[in-house]
Image (cartoon, rainbow, N blue to C red; front, side, top):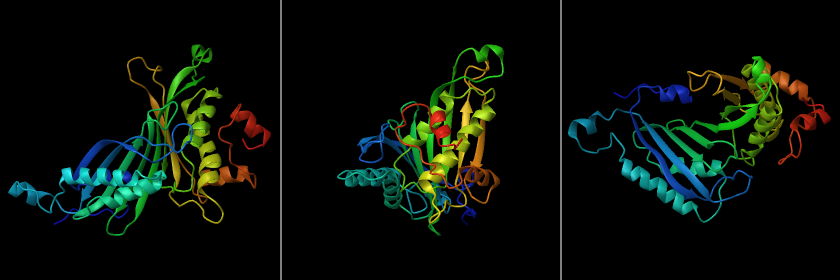
Amino acid sequence: MGARLLDNPDWDLVRSSNLDRVCVSNLHVLANTGYDAWSRQKRQPIDISVTLHLRHSISSAASSDELDQSTVHYGNLSKSVLQMVETASSQWLDVASFTQDLIDAVPIVNVAFTEVTICMSKATLVGDGVAFSLLKRQDTFVEYSMMELLKLRLPALIGVNEHERTMKQTVVVSVAFQRTEFREMKGPCEAEQIISKTVEESSFRTLESLAESIAARLVKHYLCAYLGTKAQPLPAAAGVRVTIEKPIAVIQADAPSISIYRSANPNDDFAKRMLAELGNKNNSIPFPLEGRLDDFLRSRKQD
């Protein structure tokens, strides 16, 4: 008997489920997809990870000690991914199309959920990379997408202690945009610009205030500006998770951190407040933006 399928393809629920899995992690390839750190269409190195969450257990293969249809041959899975990358290399693809082609290229026999993540280590100026993930429920074709900016290392004047007010220290910011459609946006560079300038120009005492400020600007000037319109509003589950680490703050620990999630759903209080502050103003921010983001937003009375 197969494991119970989850009603909602939420990342955490699927990953913590009792489904058996077959995974291939970090296939290193050169792919003609995505934008580099300067928002240029470039062939670049990416790491591809595929996880197949199986509909039924692999007990049959385990009992016979043979590969059968209860499992997936990870060698063939890897070859399918590499073949798709080679086939797609002749022309540049936006990352959403590339990820969709990847998820369509892998086996689906006995597969309940297919999860594909591509990580582009050269797509950010100050972080570990940008990751795009797509999770697909095979029986209903429901898809759930996420984009992450990983560990942006930025100088910030932050802290409640007197000595922390004298000079900047490094904070590490990771941001995940959850369940949003990325096909129509240019790339993550605009988001990185908003995050970097917000942190570097700030002087908050607490990580909580800094995280809320980042989330507010991303909802107003990124999610709503690039992904949502009156004709095609954001999906109900669209939102942003902001995680900030402060490595130097506690000597005995790698880093204390805080993490917040803020919704861009117009029916939620936070998004309502952000949209009310914007009114009918043009909320997009030029990229690249010369000068301070604070000054730009103040000149348009948007912050």
